[in-house]
Amino acid sequence: MKSDIRVCSAWRETHDRPVYTLSDTCPECGGAAENSAPAPFDPEDPYGEYRRALKRRHR
Image (tube, rainbow, N blue to C red; front, side, top):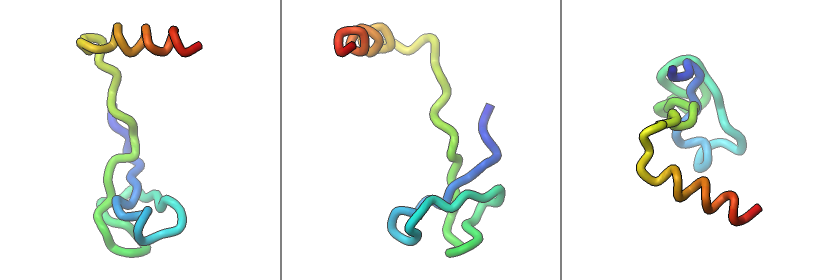
């Protein structure tokens, strides 16, 4: 499920903080807004086992 909350795609260059919105454009600069949700979890990730092992090793 994707989030309805979007963030200005150019906030690092244009704004001093992230600008969140529900529309497709930024209310402050008029730039494009992108989905602010992280990528979904994929249980069939071919490298998931290695990533988890690396995390366990660094603990």
